[in-house]
Image 1 (spheres, rainbow, N blue to C red):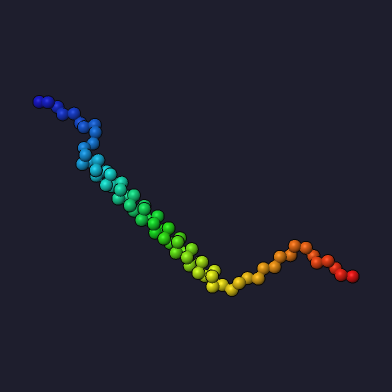
Image 2: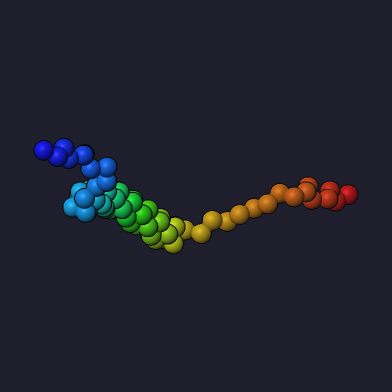
Length: 70
């Protein structure tokens, strides 16, 4: 009887199964990134609305002492 040698390559089915598994893991990662970006966008939107509703701030700058009058 002829002895069959083990296959060194992968069959198309095995290759597609591996690609499917990698794509499934990648989809989970992409969903997590999308949720993180949506949270960041929402936080930025809320902070902009809060800043718009704050009262204006009067700023004073002290560059130099005013000259003394004699």
